[in-house]
Figure (cartoon, one colour):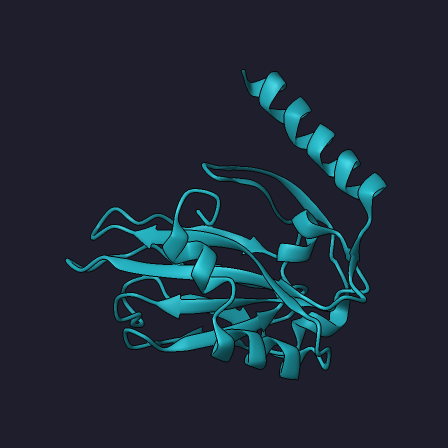
Length: 182
């Protein structure tokens, strides 16, 4: 989105978001990266399966996070972001191929919900939440007559480097999966 819009390019340089990311990551040079749109249309927004962003990002060390900005209210019944508290400490867990459109991989097994309780992140428009790249998270379907839209911005410390070999390996696995289903 930031490649096609001045608004989103400016958002990557937003002073308060940069200050937040630099403080949380303890890195005065931390940067804001890719901006994504997540929408759950009314009564049509599907399940987002349990996963970890770092499975796709391959950051070593995992000093990265995602800032989510609510466009619409995010409520318990419209598929809010749900995180498993403390799961970021588990490292990247095994994932397996998914049949969910837009998600090539899902967790092979979710962490114990008693030890890592699920926390629904309910937000009002303009609210933000932040989760670490290794946090297990998902969202349930939207069962309401209201859409639930959010922007998400990746950010990482200068210490976090993408493991290029692992990134290539995972991209090739996703391509192979698509060819197989094709």
